[in-house]
Length: 116
Image (cartoon, rainbow, N blue to C red; front, side):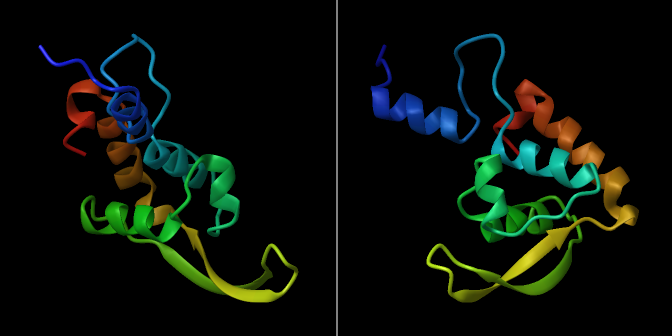
């Protein structure tokens, strides 16, 4: 039986697919949904604190694979060098909360996590 290399283990954990340990950290999608279900909004720079380095891709997965509809608001913020840049602020309309809770429950089920 082949054992995973250290880089494979780290990559697997980063994508929420760890098969070791009884308690796994929530995936970045689960962390983002939890944040949005609390009534918060987020842009790509703020998403870094949730462990998401490519927020538009995560939102695309939630929209295209799970059918969630997001509110998108363009905004101008300073980048790391203080210069203005344009980003999108994402939030969930209250009408999507029920569907989002179902997706979050699906992502929290170990046997379903790999398929989500």
